[in-house]
Image 1: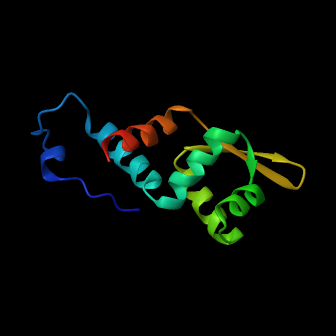
Image 2: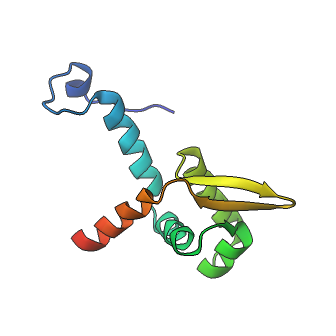
Length: 109
């Protein structure tokens, strides 16, 4: 995946105490979270703990393939953990702090 790095980051001209890698990683994580279904998944997992794909797509009233697609995006950015339990995969938030992002959005929007 190509990540655009503004010239000001690559030349270290931007005045911030964050390094370029942190800024890039943060942007990618926020991009992974920034979808209505993924925000809803984070909310479900925060409030219910571990859940199967079936439980998630039934509660959100979406198709299984759509739920799996969004869970894969969250998993790839380490927002959710997945653990096998026989035939089922149990999903959970990797850090409860991801829900803090959602709570902050509630406050500012």
